[in-house]
Amino acid sequence: MELIKQNFAVNYTYPVLFINSLFEPGKNKFLKIFEELAIADGARFLIVVDSNVAKAQPALIPSIELFFRLHPFNLLASPVLIDGGEVCKNSLSYTESIWQLINKYGVDRHAYLMAIGGGALLDVAGFAASVAHRGIRHIRVPTTVLSQNDSGVGVKNGINYFGKKNFLGCFATPFAVINDSAFLNTLSNRDFRSGIAEAIKVALIKDADFFNYLETNAEALNKRQPAATMYMIKRCAELHLQHIASADPFEQGNSRPLDYGHWSAHKLEQLSNFNVLHGEAVAIGMCLDAVYAFKMGILSSADMHRIINLVKQLGFKIYNKHLDDKDAVQNEVLNGLDEFREHLGGQLTIMLLTTIGIGTEVNCMDNSVLMESITYLKQAN
Ligand SMILES: NC(=O)c1ccc[n+]([C@@H]2O[C@H](COP(=O)([O-])OP(=O)(O)OC[C@H]3O[C@@H](n4cnc5c(N)ncnc54)[C@H](O)[C@@H]3O)[C@@H](O)[C@H]2O)c1
Ligand SMILES: [Zn+2]
Image (tube, rainbow, N blue to C red):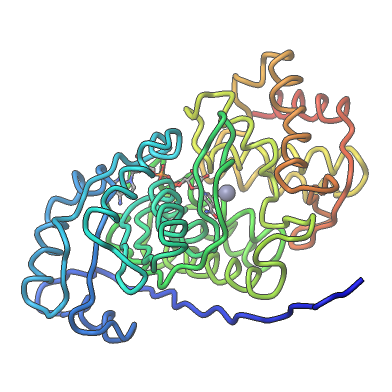
């Protein structure tokens, strides 16, 4: 046997910028960001925009076009609208439409695909960019709480396929992420709240102080107060970024701590035909795993109640009527554990909590205790 052992390391660096009002007249903030990112004169840009963002913020597209008219960068086409929300992840046609644009306008690996929108559109655009020409630079401009504090700052891109969440996708780092808090002004209360679920999640597995902060500031967050919102988004993004850099960025192992509460959440989203939002499903999933951990003697009753109380205080439901159908729960949700294992590859690994801020991993879940935990949530809702 002959063996050549190949070994190299690639260092990934990308900036995540926090700013307010990118297009504030007279402030040239967008230009300063281009300078910060060392984007060369003549650089070519294709921009896709979440249709709901364009509708809610009608000044956005004229501002982008004006910026490119005034500065020496090349906008290859007027910003292209793509349907926002989960719909764009549920059909390959949206990804294909971006590939068509990349092909039509000759976007190559020295050009940029900028995507402005919610987590769903960013997942699609990041996936389209990452596989076209084996990877075009993509810049994410997240416009929801969830995409600014979690999905938009990480390395995962993907779409749903075969009716399964994120079945097609890839790990690819963005060229840069630009978090502009002004986008959040037009977000619905429901979508705003949904994103806070990811902050609770990351606090639960990594940072008890941040959990305390969320408890203390729950009312401020419900009122969408800017200071509390900005702190919550920045701390949540920071914890996600630290985790990605320090642990297993491309998820080669079995462990997925950032997916606390997610195994059942993904199934609940599907069961509800995506009428339950990702964050709403995660809120229920986190409570389910907290009750389960309590019933298994891993988590204290006091901690379980603190988790449920915070989730409720922030306006989430801890139960959903789709969980009433016992057969569907058995077939779709509990069997979802198997799908989760398949998605991870290898051994089933579920993150549970031993206390707030500290997780532990288990390799099997007891179905009857899970069913009891679901009943508990129904009664406590
Ligand atoms: N890649 C990852 O690591 C990762 C992590 C977590 C979640 N996700 C994915 O993110 C998606 C959810 O993202 P989301 O919560 O941002 O929801 P979303 O993208 O579905 O956006 C919610 C809704 O708000 C609209 N919208 C977006 N920004 C707006 C704004 N500023 N003003 C008005 N309307 C606006 C959208 O068009 C959509 O209708 C899910 O598909 C989930 O699987 C991905
Ligand atoms: Zn999530």
